[in-house]
Length: 315
Image 1 (tube, rainbow, N blue to C red):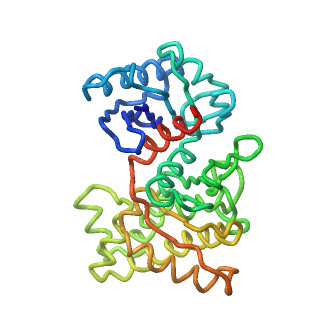
Image 2 (tube, rainbow, N blue to C red; image 1 turned 135 degrees about the horizontal axis):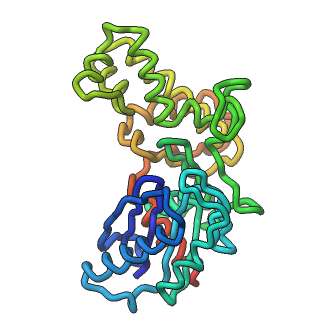
Image 3 (cartoon, helix red, strand yellow; image 1 turned 45 degrees about the vertical axis):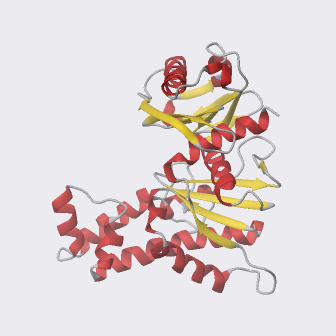
């Protein structure tokens, strides 16, 4: 058994995972990110004990603990070097967790952990695998020959901070035109809000009034009802995602490229036009093509990936 922990800015999700990647039991608690890392790790440890006990197992059966955290992560030292959303600066997360358990602890960037989970679920026979997750931001992970690619300094695979619009919208990273500013669900919601104001008779306004807000689903659902403004939003958003996917494929030519995050639940509505765009625009015209897929694990990818990355590092 392995413990997988997905540390987020809103919630801490913890699962007991078997060696095949099946979640036996999981639970979560609010992160309350204004706290220091010591208190957050204490809650992680408490949840780890809880899911293990409630599943009918004991901590003696657990071989290692894996943690996925936002921010810049130093895997070799088990440290979150910097995570703005968690207010962490050189936080020794692995060492703090070992105060509670005499077990190996592996710390990964959260997107890397999710990528590894999806790799095991959808592409573990592939020699090269790229994962892009569309959420509040745009995260990414790269698996080469079965290993997480972190870059020489641990800060690799920041897909969301590649430029797709020169001089475009200013990103939180300080640059302009980052993929994250156009392909994240945050960007999709902003685009939907702009359309709502521009086209007051659009179904988008009815959707927003009924629910009190727009979401990542709004444009997709309204487009299905034949709303023209929603269709334009959906197409513009998908085009941005497709540009990012195509760029990564041109660089890595991976066997498999997987798109995750909540918006990936739109399935073929998202996948088919992305495949069409990449087929027309990728550099490779003569060799076997990258297979583009939708994620399987969704919100569980971080738990599974963190656990199985810990399993790998424990060998």
